[in-house]
Length: 494
Image (cartoon, rainbow, N blue to C red; front, side, top):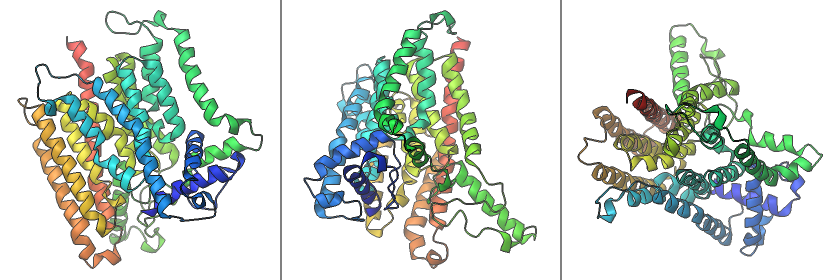
């Protein structure tokens, strides 16, 4: 699709052709620069190579420019920067606990993890078909996680600080990093019962962490802070555009999708019972397929402050858990997953692609734990299918269906073989739910486009996909929480 090609072409042109002071003010295109400054510097670096392919792509007013050299450069830039992700996968595989006596390379946890990450269906379509630099960014995240698993905490913190200044969506997992590093790195010892020893606090370690984070922020935001023309407020207004509305044009499969459906149901029931006047209700306010501020028809409308409060409440127990009993880097990783999913489920204007923030790190736990493998299969299958609407043309149906089918079959077969002899990975109701996903796919992707409802209710397949997948994502979130609480109870029983 040309949408994201034009987004990044426009950002290449802005950073190459305009002075820094105009980067976050330029609005010739509707795809304005809305990533943190470090990503803008990254685009500036790419533009130096882009001009050797086709200098016309670097003209700001050359909207929707997509010459063959331009498309070639953008695709090559994604492939080249994916080297960061490949290296991160290598480091993660080094941290996996291998099975004793396993000689079959194809059934080793490290090999399975490498396939789950490198050939991840969701990452493949959002980077190489839908077109973005998510592999490059997820490379920093996974490499940071690997460094913490290797007890190289300063390197892990530095990598995450860089990542946060490249794309601010990773604020979703920042609380897990903050609490874990403060508890496990700045406090050097625990009491025998695992409780915190306050006297072990190291101010030098805290200063080292703070210095790393501030140094990265200074490189990223420094030039904008030093300018006296109100640059920093303008940058922040681009990074946090609260006027875009509660939900994206296509609802992410989260709690607010279920809330929107409930609102529609209550409004319809209210009209039939003559408790509400149909003429006074907003028409298609949440189902117009547009990025805009919308009001709910019957239920209270949700503000950014409410989503923030819900997000904090959803992740606080996990943060408290790793503060009381850190349980090493794997406990941190589990907390990171809960923060990612909590923010995805309750956040403001969440993009559907953000579900990968949980799917990719969960791959690591899936190859080590049978219970986590079951959660992974539900979340990955549900989350990946929720990305189907990103590729909406008939020509892409066979491609996305084939790619997802291959990844899903490998995931189920490899994890079942890896954890064989310890019972089924999925519970009966989970199997029924996933089979229902097949029915949803056939109905939305094959039957609906041929039906007369397509013209009257164009948003219906998106609504069905989002709501059905939201149930699976919510369920996975609750199972992860239950797993975290059980692991916290084990030391007490012992």
